[in-house]
Length: 245
Image 1 (tube, helix red, strand yellow):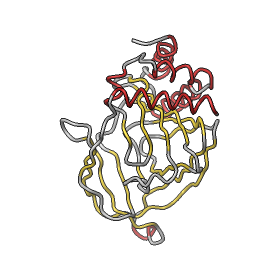
Image 2 (cartoon, one colour; image 1 turned 90 degrees about the vertical axis):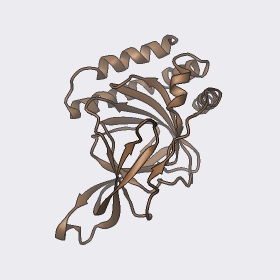
Image 3 (cartoon, one colour; image 1 turned 180 degrees about the vertical axis):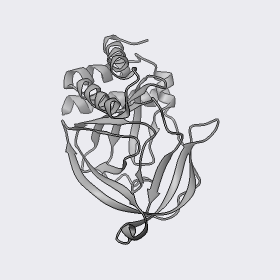
Image 4 (tube, one colour; image 1 turned 60 degrees about the vertical axis):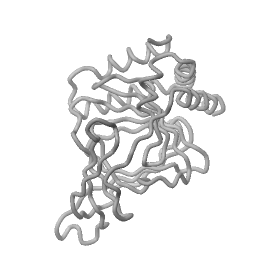
């Protein structure tokens, strides 16, 4: 199932990520792999192959959708429990329900900015007197609903956060984050930003932590998967963006 670039991407990801690596080595390996896959000609050929129906369009469409953080999440390579390669298309001023949320992930990740620019803030939780000058927030534990892929948000009390880092990632830059790193990212330009995102799967946490300063969240947020024609159309549109960069 797959053309030349799809099969080559699968081999690269399996070789880089399928061993039993410590978390910090896994994040570094993911960053190296996603950078290699983001080479302009290679990425364009991969997206064009997938847009033509190579790979697993039915399976990938079921796991592709508009994310609550305000970007289009397009699954490219499903490596099962070990890794998942996605393209994220960030839209300026998306107005998504969770766009201000500070969160972490279930496993180490790496991302490469293909086009546009991302802004990112990193945070840490603070307790007691150390939290006097922190940012007041409401904490939730986010997990997947049993029998579906919808997000379930369970209130987990009040918290205070401290901003530790502010950065910008322009086209051609990459980053890797351990699973527990609290962060917020958004499109930092007036045109869409495209990133190649690699999620590792070893030792995945059962839930993530979500912090919001924007008021209560609903208890559940539905994921609306793309239909196959819409998924292939989104890939074709992405290929056109890459040709124009």
